[in-house]
Length: 282
Ligand code: SF4
Ligand code: SF4
Ligand code: SF4
Image (tube, rainbow, N blue to C red; front, side, top):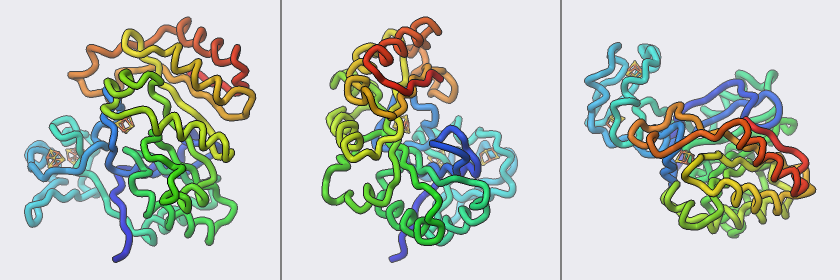
């Protein structure tokens, strides 16, 4: 059977998803459920409850054989469907085969340095991505292939070898170092994330680590210190990200607090004191 993948969104030109101008592809589905997720509609598959069909102002959504379908040309991007969904899903998902996705890359190829797959959690669809990256490398060897990941799959495992080999670089989220804190935030354990941090560094495929700083919830200093000790003296970039309410589920916002500029600077100073050479606060 031909491989296909569910895609939430494609951004043709992005300069925040790895080096240079890149096509960013957001895969649908995630195995974490982070309280601060800015795109919670990427977490689950649509349950075809039909509620969003009723609120769509342009009839871009309709029911076909018990499943909800989306007519992109009628959509005004009001996101009423996303707001009403109780299942952290989106009806605006498109399914692509590898050839169909390659056609999308072809349209922008002269203007990009590479492709980044993100999510949701893109690595859950690693088989598709492996073949997609192989095809990119076959057609355009100068394009780089990056993966943005929450680090949940143990990439050291033999079953992911081909996927890791074909990927140029990974960008890894380390959301919390403490096990219980990570579970409270994401609903999953941190063990694989930490192993991936060490493994990807050891094979020189770690481009960037990201930590979102949330006050009154996370031990931000512990996470930054532990990550910094591992990526110390390398060229791996450490992005220290300010938590913001934007896009976060309203019912969860009340427990999440943004750090001040001073607090972020103190965390950056901590990373730099541990000889992290490349830090960035955003
Ligand atoms: S996207 Fe959400 S609201 Fe719409 S049909 Fe699917 S599950 Fe229901
Ligand atoms: S964003 Fe959703 S609700 Fe709004 S027009 Fe598009 S499909 Fe309809
Ligand atoms: S890993 Fe990313 S996409 Fe998944 S729930 Fe967390 S923030 Fe959202």
